[in-house]
Amino acid sequence: MRINNSAPSAFSTRLSAALAVATLLVGAGAAPESDTATTEAKESSAIATFAGGCFWCMEPPFDALDGVISTTSGYTGGHQQNPTYKEVSRGGTGHTEALQIVYDPKQVSYAELLDVYWHNIDPTDPHGQFCDKGDQYRSEIFYHDDEQQKLADQSKAALVELKRFTGDVVTGVTAATVFYPAEDYHQDYYRKNPVHYNRYRLGCGRDHRLKDLWGDSGH
Image (cartoon, rainbow, N blue to C red):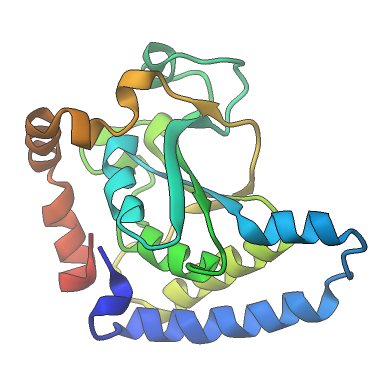
């Protein structure tokens, strides 16, 4: 999905305005970086981590964005070290399936990533995402620094203010913790196993629900 290739939705317009204000506030209070090399390294790439249910389904919309360097499916937010897919999927680890994104901030902003994220989840579901239920499929934004926290909070507030949905916006905004990459066979699953992936996505009702929530701007 390329949100910026179509006419902006009311939420996208309001979100952009809110995020612009948040960015100025964060920038105004930021301390200057003394190490030039460190500054250049930070500016060349950044990390974003989002949970939105099945990580297979979260990869495609971000892989399609210019400026996204890589996406990695994995587990985060829990207490168990080095969890396996079987352990996470049956619950009890505290982890949720998540996607870690390495991106070039000069090509795609964190605000744009947030916009894509929201349009690919059901932010009103407190029990999981789509057909996948349980805390291990919860939606959550894991911020990596103060700026990301500000922007994530602003974007959630803009969504709440819009009152687009009948239910409450329950997606969490939480400090990032250790991210454990999932097993190799989960990475790029939609490319490696397109038939099974498409069958699962259709059967899970993900696209149908996204259209109900977001109209044509979803997914």
